[in-house]
Length: 303
Image (cartoon, rainbow, N blue to C red):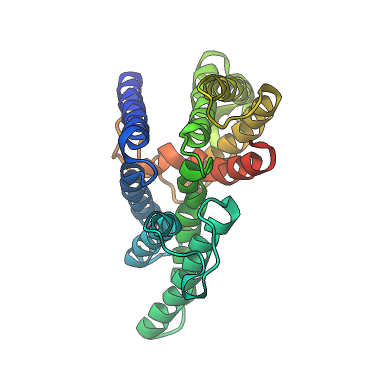
């Protein structure tokens, strides 16, 4: 188990760093590898969540969930693609700035509204008798929100340093969130004594949570220092410490919230896609909750 987890973790880390490096070195600011990875990862996470929820009264329509999440992924890249194609900011009555982090969030939000309305319409067309439509619709919208809408903040972190291109915001997010995961897992196994939230996850401990926060802060401080050394947009040290604490807390909350989903669905893992970890959703759960917090923190205290 530990060997599989280590091998899978190292492989995923290497792939993530390679994607950032190649995109930044040769493909900026389109970042096609980042968008390909986001499409594959969020698409698979959507499939896993839809299958998990089939074990509850909310039985989402898998096709709607997956297509809805993929529509949100496309909406996240749309403003950046239009900006690179030289589309006028005023064209067609649109007024947006692809370098403005709040402006670009309007695109996935509008897409989300369209997806929800479409889900309603499809469910109404398929409606035959009372008793199941609302459960299916609720499950579908929940899955799209959880994976697609929360995941939008992780995707947009790649462009957060615009108009300059820099991998620091997304690298700091991933390093801090996964640092919280690794710290909690490691210290929990070595010194865990007091249960943190046994109703949701019986194996997580208070000691592990403390270890997660420590490693999250260390990761944030190191990545911020790397950014400053390279002359890239970054956080100063006090802001990086606050970032590590806040994002570390929400990363662990994200892990616990996915544990609640799996526990309610009476499943141990989202799938068996990744040896040692379970499913894709089991890997990105901390990022889904940490992403919006990290994005807002960077907007408020970033350069």
